[in-house]
Length: 253
Image (cartoon, rainbow, N blue to C red; front, side, top):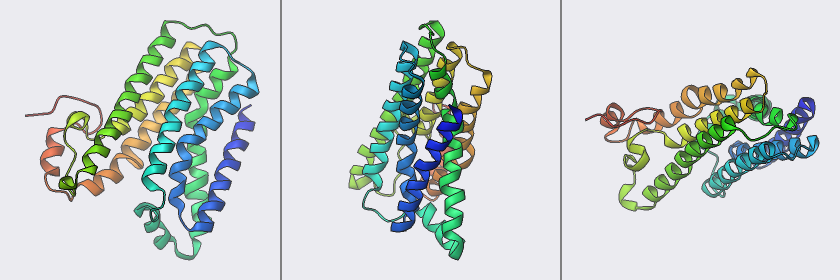
């Protein structure tokens, strides 16, 4: 099953690579991220034929998250130029942009997708698992994270719609408790999936999933890149001293 999932992910990102290369816009890979997990979850569900409660609930949670994220990013990016991150890499890589984008953008995300989706595939392979207290805890943790991601994104979107806020920092709502509620929410959801996996009796290796996504968001592609863009905005120094970087906490006075 794991080999099949690897092949599905490879073909999936290969198609996006061909499209991104044709239109010279590698930022479409951002749209591939969320819905890719949905494809993996549904494929492994159908392939194993495990339609137990825990397996179905897990697939539903992944579909809710991945589908919403795909729509959110598509609405934000569709019809716009290549994101500044990928545009900068295009200039930096020069004549090697195609080969480097293939490995460093598309295939690398494929590797991360496999690692993060690992517990979902394992859950589907565990037939006959009944809903238990640990499963309920995992679902609750997932819902907590989903709330932070959805509400955080909605609050930021409403803030940006007001022309008076152009160039300003979002510092209210959930953004008063963490500078990155959406990233915190995404990481938390995968910790919830991991707990559900544990409730199904899977190997502890599944912990790689939440560890990797949390590490990426906090130290690599999420928080660092966004903070680099935020640091030049008026009031960031005060905001950063008052508000927790990642884990939600009461703002300092």
